Length: 300
Ligand SMILES: NC(=O)c1ccc[n+]([C@@H]2O[C@H](COP(=O)([O-])OP(=O)(O)OC[C@H]3O[C@@H](n4cnc5c(N)ncnc54)[C@H](OP(=O)(O)O)[C@@H]3O)[C@@H](O)[C@H]2O)c1
Image (cartoon, rainbow, N blue to C red; front, side, top):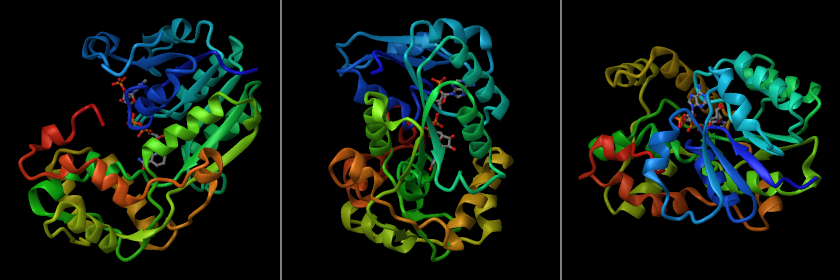
């Protein structure tokens, strides 16, 4: 069955906002958000389609029924901080109301790493009655402005503790484009795709791309873990989030984040975006005149 009506959870998020854009010409899209009023008021000048903003909160099951009503498929995202059991309870609810297909945004390596919530959520989905597709994404290039843009803007540096490890950065817009393909085509049931960019880069190579595109010197600071933790905590980021980042960058440091696949190209029929494409497209996020608040604007 080809989906006619799709609920995009975290529909305002890094990937979800682009899934909404990708889908809106082909299907009826429901944008799931905890703050429907402000999202409606903000509007989207690109949209003249039959698109509905609906209240949806993993922590408030009373919002699920209306959000799922009549839905054939859902793009499922576990936002940071949302508990695993809330996501699995939502999968059960979707299955009960006969949602046909769940496309779950997971992470590279989730099949092998039994310790992470993505692994357990994938297992739960597999055991449910819904058809499923897993998108196991590498590190989003968009982290470079959403999380680390302030370092580029204020200090002309990339400040992550990844040593000389490589990362196969994937552009969130490409993850979204793949999501749109698999949501609107029946042939991806029980499939899992490993989504990476076209190459793996060290952070000094990333800094060189920034230097070239922005036409000013950007360096890779390669901080120690304590120095990284100190700077992130000075920005009032929660300790749990900072430690999660330390884990992610340690994975890169030890050489486990550089695997490159051709899944994006096979599914989209074109090569994935490069880090250079990303810096060119998001150049204004890294201009020194921008305030940190502007660098984190919701339209990403
Ligand atoms: N970052 C990476 O490099 C990377 C790589 C691979 C996989 N992933 C995975 O990708 C997922 C995150 O995707 P993303 O970056 O696109 O998400 P995101 O931008 O972090 O999404 C956050 C959105 O989720 C919504 N949200 C927050 N709490 C919610 C709740 N209780 N109920 C419903 N919605 C809620 C918020 O929207 P509203 O305020 O509008 O409700 C917010 O905009 C994570 O599971 C992560 O592990 C990330």
